[in-house]
Length: 356
Ligand SMILES: [Fe+2]
Figure 1 (cartoon, rainbow, N blue to C red):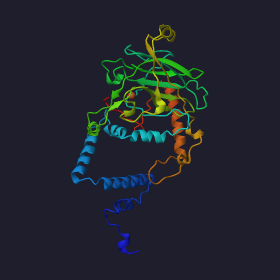
Figure 2: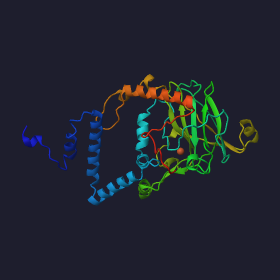
Figure 3: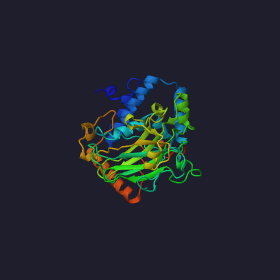
């Protein structure tokens, strides 16, 4: 090989190859794989878009502003990931489940610890505002066998679209939050209120981008859930209100068709009395089907350690076992303390934002 062949000077044509060649000595194979993929995609993107110098400076300015917007209460980077659909994609990749299992969606930023466990049939409303919803359902495995003692952690926005921790001077603490435990037959029921759609924080760089793209910043009305049980994968999900006008325009792409539920309207005094709600009211059936911990189910080959060099995350069997262990430990903690933090930085979520 001649000296000319061995040296790779940077050209427009070989740009990605030259940069990736510098990574060949990397000892961390995963890091090298991820960065090589990132470089190749980024160079391809630049070659396709051909930005002017001014446009590139504008892009750097946007990224700088995004970083400056972050503090211990606001995470603009996660918000950017959310509105680009990346958070949902990472969550979806990491929660591939067998057919019939309840689908995951984003956790969101408003989950809190230390919520009281409530009696079956109780209301989660501490202030009595809003249209009452009778929520009932069953937690089963994917074959329909009931799961007794599953912990259902629920939280939701108020009738006008705010969580209690956004309005500490207006809403009582733990308003519209509660933890319930399923009966022997896997069933549960409680009283909620009809949630309202709400906007994500749009007063930062992400809001500028959304407006620049004529995109909405609303999330459709939903109830949040984390459902956990020993031996089963924890399900972090929503139930969305069927008919919400922004169901197909969720700013963070959290809606999945299987998670849309009919919040049926009722005007029936005797039924209301029987269910212990005020008339008129709504009802919704929210069932959950967690799947067995991943270590116990047959996984597709890609999830069992098969490596793909470009694109796609690599999941290994030891990682799955660890995830199963963590799920179990998490449930035990939740049983002991009522609730524990189940927040992930990645996989979902515009966590720790101060805004709506
Ligand atoms: Fe929410």
